[in-house]
Image (cartoon, rainbow over all chains, first blue to last red; front, side):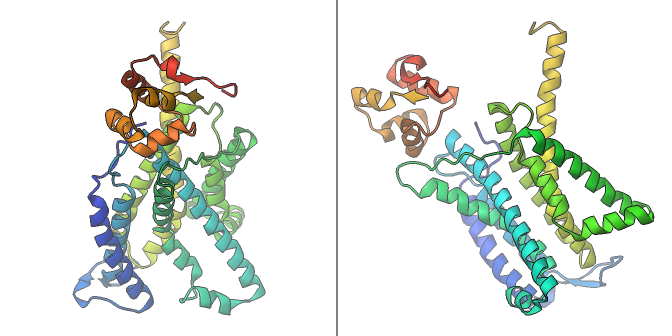
Length: 303
Length: 66
């Protein structure tokens, strides 16, 4: 397995120089109201204020680009096994990140029901844990990935640690998750486009429980296809890396185009976008092979 | 899958690092393959067997579990 989409190894150092200041300035601008005056830029937005300060946008971009460089720069000796470890770790990181997200989401909605607002304020300074968590969610997958990958590669001096990802069986998980994801997504889209009281109620309920849609997409991603083999595993691993790249490119773009209220929307989308990109790419490459075989059979190549 | 890389290395008197250099992978990769934790790709298996001047079948053997 060759990994085609990696940066040269010196990008790791550039990444550190981008990520650390990005994190510090980001922290200061979100929690300490710190901003650099010269970054006030006039923007004309529908929902957004006339003038926007770009301190937090720039620091988020610097943090995310830095982490991407650290995560996806070559090792000194990159070979097929390190490529496999890297991609396995990526799957693992995405999974763990979502599990953490679900755990926090469930825990705090329980606290909210009971009325422990102080605890919420204590853990998340601002008391808006929904937005806070969506904000962390933009870079935590990368942080978890970097930790996991370097653990697998460097923890033992003599050998690599091999981890084999386990996936859920095809039946019934993939089928149910597929149906659930598509129907939930279409309910949300219908709610947003048309004004139908019945669907509106369901849509609101689905939208408010922020777990439902990500969970069904997650199960779809992490369950086996009808005939999972070596090749599909490789497609799976590649697709996840591409999905991470595409997702972060769009996120960085959105970071500079949308402000204020618009950006909350972007953070909401970000909860499932990576999974959606993965599914599109993965299903595309799997089915491309399938149709090719069908054509070959018809053409008499394989009979 | 089992392999006899360790034995072949002893016969040829080369270290894991030497073998790794010869086929362009990291030393840890050779170690992980030798301890039967990782099944190398066909390309890598062919490169390893070329170093020892034997056929792939002589070095890599299917296990009962496979």
